[in-house]
Length: 152
Image (cartoon, rainbow, N blue to C red):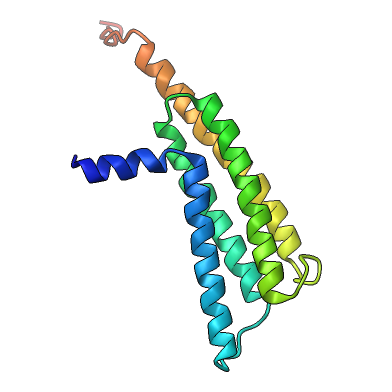
């Protein structure tokens, strides 16, 4: 692995870095949408809430999968949840600013945020359980199965 790839991989292990990168993408899409709106393109105000929710889902998947590579799962889990909350709040604030709609005025996005949060916690728990099973299997002594003598 090249030094540049190793550096990028090491940087992506931090949930705070992941959330910062995803927030940058949210802001990029929000600014692009606002520029298109100012240029006369008809963009629905809920577009900004859609961007925020979509990237929240992206972060959930990315963060959960990268948790498999973490050395300390407890430490990673705590940082991940804080990062998720920060991203949800800051993404929501950005959506509010760009759309001029509160989360309650944006229709179903309030429920979508709740579902995404519950889904994130479930997905993170499943990944953590899978990791524990893998670690258990790696530490377990493996013995070949004995051949069965079926009535002979």
